[in-house]
Length: 141
Image 1 (cartoon, rainbow, N blue to C red):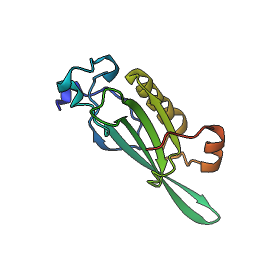
Image 2: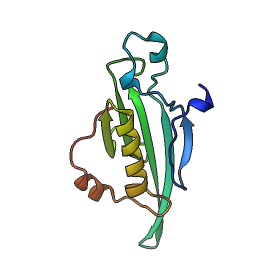
Image 3: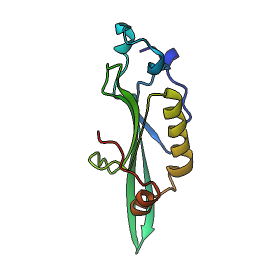
């Protein structure tokens, strides 16, 4: 991977980039016969985390949020971009899931979620309320 090919992203303060492999390639526009480019279509494009804290009942609570966009399954022209959000590394029950063939849609959804709903460090997510407002079962990983 070449750093000059990275997908431009806006990530607000408070997030830690664990890894960034998100090249500025739109897999939707690549021919399924172009084997060399499909090698770049990896599941783990980006992983960012943030911790939020709050005091409740004289106790300090810490919440860890993870955001994971990727191409699932990797190296497969029939795959999709998928964006997951999880609390406390609970991958069995993602807080949010979004799937699209469009890189633009995934990038826009990532920005929307980061700046509207997951804005750390002061954004402690009420999981029950969040799930109620975001009905629909997220895709399974």
